[in-house]
Amino acid sequence: MSDAPKVMIFRCGHVAIVGRPNVGKSTLLNHLVGQKVSITSKKAQTTRHQVTGILTTGDAQFIFVDTPGFQTLHRSRLNMRMNRAVTEGLSSVDAVIVVIEAGRTVAADRNVIALLPHDAHAVVALNKIDQLGDRDVLLPQMAGLAALYPFVAIVPVSAEKDQRLNELAAALRPLVPERPAMYGSDEITDRDERFLASELIREKIFRLLGEEVPYAATVAIDQFALEGEMRRIHATVYVERANQRAILLGAGGTQMKEIATRAREDMERMFGGRVFLEVWVKIKRGWADDDNLLKRFGY
Image (cartoon, rainbow, N blue to C red; front, side, top):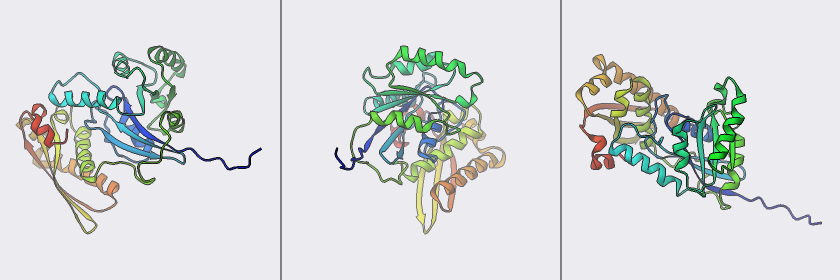
């Protein structure tokens, strides 16, 4: 009988988080890594970029990619790029989390499942179990999902309440390859502060305004400078029409001031220091269908 110590096998890999709009993908990413790296709101299609979050445990490192919600509304070059990012992302990762709302599987969920490569290592996260009145519906839903695709596991979770996220990570661990960590154990994202600042401004626009303006707006960081321990940030919000600019500004600029104040407060918490934030609102007609502008804005 050997007394040789067991060698711990470390695993590291990329995991895509996919699902229809507004099922809680960004909330799941934020709670898995323990800090906000992806913006959230109750409106669909909040996430436009692939956002990476990093979770390092004692025996694994997961590099999560929060993809835009695959959708067919708001047809534009912007949304074509977002949908392409989803499909391309699925072919370049080691595992996939398909986020579906607990209690109901709708046609849009099945459309996302149909995008999965036939050999994907996929796990379902049945999210929002904390909002489910009758948990007896979970078993039939899980059986229906198992008939749609050979999922490795189906794990009921609540991202918002941090319920069963450890079980989700445990289901993912065998699906990523044996290799050393790619990032330091204290890193939670590969996105820089400039990107995170623009996303926090856009999040407040989604949270504070109605249905039309958030989808017509994008944010560009014009200046990001570190002055001692203070970050000086100048940003521009671009919209497509004059009436959208007026809504964003509000009476006497009060709406934009509220958006900027909330974004600055979040930045100071995230970056751990003082932030001076100045935000302008400009009209750029047709930006969502202009390839050159989309490249400039990082899409």
